[in-house]
Image (cartoon, rainbow, N blue to C red; front, side, top):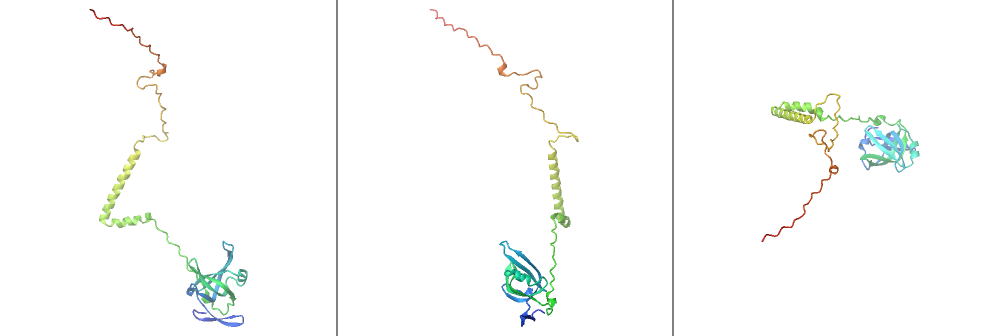
Length: 232
């Protein structure tokens, strides 16, 4: 069987000519009646509980996913993975890829089929190249800058500014720190002094609260004397 050439398929004692349609030529919305190799089949249930038979149909040009939605048991029992199938159905789309909804299928005798047309070689899986970190490219970028005298001078000035900035931050971090020996624990702050003691007056001088002081005697008032009348 070659591309574009018909092959004779015997079905129900009647001779029928089937034209091979390759996967690469399958168009969305087209009706298919052709032969594929069933590379894989699997039964599963959807979230709604509906059972579906999934089949991977292949030929030498690619892979066409197919689904059987009706008569699952009969369709599953009609063939095995690795058989050649004559399928009839319509091509739809699922997740932006072609998918064949099979209405009828039949297992074929492999003898009259050109098996070279159904040898499917999956494309190699290309792993994405690791994205280089910016730090990995930094030495190369600096080397290119150093080739330009003006860029090298500007880079040197920038490095000097960064070094001064780093040195200034280091000095600020050291301010307010008293030297301490290794293994020495920081001393705790002393408890607040008694407010009743006044520093600088000696340890024996203590101020008493006003309530403990003796009351002062009230001042005596002299009796008022009437002024003497003026002499006449």
